[in-house]
Length: 430
Ligand code: NAD
Image 1 (cartoon, rainbow, N blue to C red):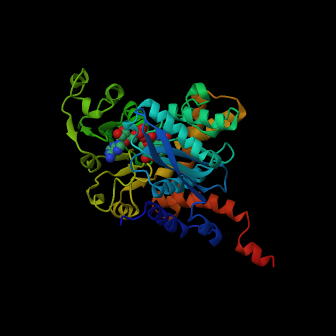
Image 2: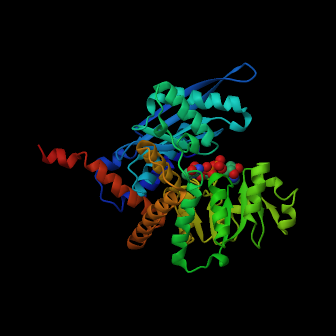
Image 3: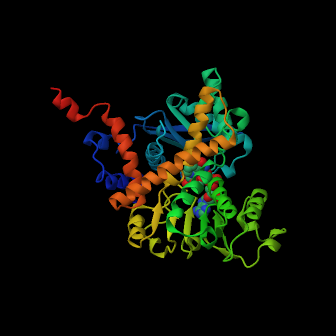
């Protein structure tokens, strides 16, 4: 049987625990999710038949605040995956010093096979099934893979119907017209770009001398690809679920964004239309080939478990910035670390999404809304501060940046858990 993703995630926790002095009580608590809910969602399909989908919501730890985490619609969603994603959210919120815990949700479905009506009924049905498990002060969902602002809007509306009052703060990533925040749609890629710029500044490499490959050209991947392109980096390869494209001289990312938006597939980018004339000498590549390109920076921005013990040896990038959650297994980590590759971890690099989700929640609760400039300025300050702190811990303890990020988060989580009382407190009080 394949290794559980949660036990693999827990291995990272064990590594970091060696460098932090938190109580045994706190570390024991962090090994298990607080609550996991599995639901069946009956959906009336357009042809009149009834189909039942499996859904999940996991609240991993709420010691530092209401739990927070996205909802994924994907055929491979399992409880194990959702628990792991909730685990990562717990550490991500602590690493960014957000007053939130970690959660995640998902439905096992291929949303591309549903009509818009069926997708709306499924989204509302999911909320009907989990309504007692979430709430603005309890657990606040958000978008993730294959969910978007419109779906968040339906979900907020459904929760408000159930509660008989408008509850914008129950979910983030909503459309602007329904209480969404400026900058939420681009936050993950933008935050990752701020982290990349801040950390690459330590390696004395000018953007125009730096080549980048981005796996996954969705919400997060396309935004960071565009920001890197605008900043002068040579983005030489991008890919999506159907395959990738490569050009040694660099790709024209704005044209690709435009074509992807109109065709929904990178495959079509170079086959028709004027962009064929804009960029020459491109090659079709597979996702596997993209991962092993000889580039300076690799940005996995698709799904988890893309770099494993099987292909880690083929990786030639010098720096990896994990925009996806969990794209590298812990076994692969060891191989890449031994090769001297710097891996900047998901719980830091992609934390821009949850940070601006937090801003959205704050704005919904206060009723005062911020400008895009304000959102991005606050995001930059917060994420760069934590990136620099994590880099400093990595240097001080001579550990990989991933372990340093866990150490940083664990110190905050440990303090919060310890302040509720530990064995030492109770035993010494006898
Ligand atoms: P998305 O659905 O917008 O994009 C996913 C992209 O990955 C698509 O281009 C898809 O075609 C591609 N893809 C799917 N399978 C692939 C494969 N096997 N190989 C290559 N590409 C493949 O999703 P997103 O929101 O951009 O999320 C991407 C990753 O970033 C996920 O791991 C997600 O958990 C993480 N993330 C997203 C956010 C956010 O705010 N969107 C926040 C934090 C983390």
